[in-house]
Image (cartoon, rainbow, N blue to C red):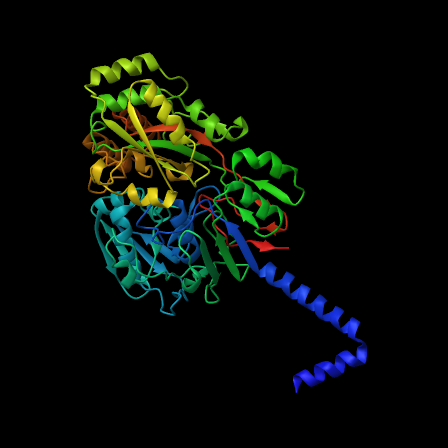
Length: 534
């Protein structure tokens, strides 16, 4: 019946006009659909979907798509309530009482309850650096009712809200209890949150494509979106993450409008992208990023502090920054562990920041007892933001006499392998390079690289150092900002002395975005709410 009326209509108004109208309608429909779908090239492929299991930013950014948090931070890094409607602190500073907002619901339709929150925080507290420290001061978490719960401390702790509002890896995301009960060393079996987008499991291609759809049940806060806080309004119906490892292919896709945002364009392509009138280059990470060389203290010969110190003296940041970033507009030599834009910025104890001392490094290595053992550097081939760093380290280490082997792999493989404590001949490793947002490392509690917990709770590389743990505790207990800064300086000196890690400089990673895409938020993580296509 419909077909007959259609043909009658076409005959009446003329075939050519009719087809023209249809073609126009189809074009409009396609254009409208395009406006509802945001296509995004992430910095790497997503394989690990559990943002508590790993600190990888891919997993963190995925977490922000589907999960929500109790607290978050605004553009001045001030902690704000998010899932929490209100909270109060007892006069003795030992009991925090929190109440959840009305209407919070998981993607499977179940309400978010205090039980879910407590289970989620317990799991997060096993892996995250600030979570671990918070839980050492925790006496218990108590469920008062379905929407109200309490944190009872053993002694006053000044970083409770900073911990719960932590904006970057590992973020204390809230998930259903049945998922949160998963051991912290095992990937959660589902992707169910209460956040502004829902994970489309049927279209997930690990490492290749991730699809999210707008969560119609999400109730944003009324405040404007700011950093990771405020109203998380999904303004597109669908978001597609499309992994394109080759930078030239990614650039071409952006120029043609096949994708809307390229999270981390290769620095050497920025001049070409800047010439295109349809593309903006926007810095959405105002606090910057920091490169890090991390060594594995479990593996000989890096279990020898003298070997690590020799390597520290062999490096200088400018070599890395020039090779990886290239344009000094986007980088800065920086020896401060907590970021050069942080209130705790200092050069105290810094070694090898501006200039290497190769002769001294050679002598230190010779005096260390090093016998020429192979040192394995894991090198990611598909992560454009750090893939040059291992290629700088290798010749620097060889120049002082280290026997280096560079093993290439994709970033997600590296992320999985760095968790292995096994000997080298069983898949272990010696060195990897990574990057952190300054927001991740602005104090000794947040900065995972300063942890000294070893195999139990330590960051990959498993530095074990009771001295630095005492200093971190001193920092956590100290309410006076001036005294906190002095303690942070002591932490920094200890990190350089024992070579917990080697800072390789600060950089600013802009994104390439088509100009019809608006609403991107400067943030401590890469968030995709508040964005629409004009």
